[in-house]
Image (cartoon, rainbow, N blue to C red; front, side, top):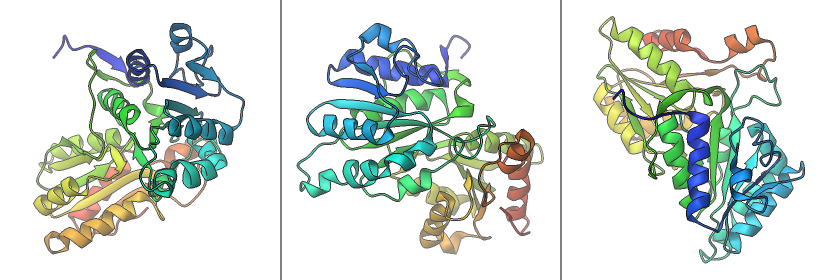
Length: 333
């Protein structure tokens, strides 16, 4: 409705964090430049002024230390939100993430709680070059003990972030850099979007398209164009990548009999391969064509704007991939 309040994606994140800080004295934030500067993308803007330097903490430039701080605080009863500027920097802190945060509950026989939320900015599209533009969600989803979230809309950003903060297990919230400015309806009141529940963005009977993050918007644009030709795409946004709501995806595959998975990460070894594998395990007899995958080529993300634009899947390339599955022509990367 026209009177719905709209917020940018970045402010939906900010509001979820602010409300959590208001509601729970055990919640605090820590990260590089998130205090007075508000974060490299402004996601924490104004929070230190509102809640003070003890609850919105600027840290040294040390990703291992930031995650280690979060793990220690979480296991001793606090509810930290720790920020890594870019998703690429996760690699610096993987020992803390993989061997500490993800494992402690198991190592302590289920007795330990790790209510840790790790936030980071992923994806390309800003000509930030190969070390600041990656989509590494598949690495994180492979780790038992982590929950991985990748919202595509402001509404889902606020609700999923609220769910992450309340979760008693470590979660990773991936904010897509190119989505920070998009606007959408966001209620002012507190609400959560449950982890592990997909969203059927668009209903259709001809082909199922599974996508997350920025690709949801490219897929929707392709689906709307194809609708003009009478081709009805069902678009599913998992929202949470780990745990994955495979039941919703499989139900759609059984209805449409054709599936295309789209992601911004490189195609080889990407999460799309896992989605495709589970579909063939649970819905093979319903498929009229192999599951298609549309993703980035096996290359570092280019710095050149022209090359980067060619590298990242867009609506035109997705439309071509959908036609390939519908009309049984080969689907490329």
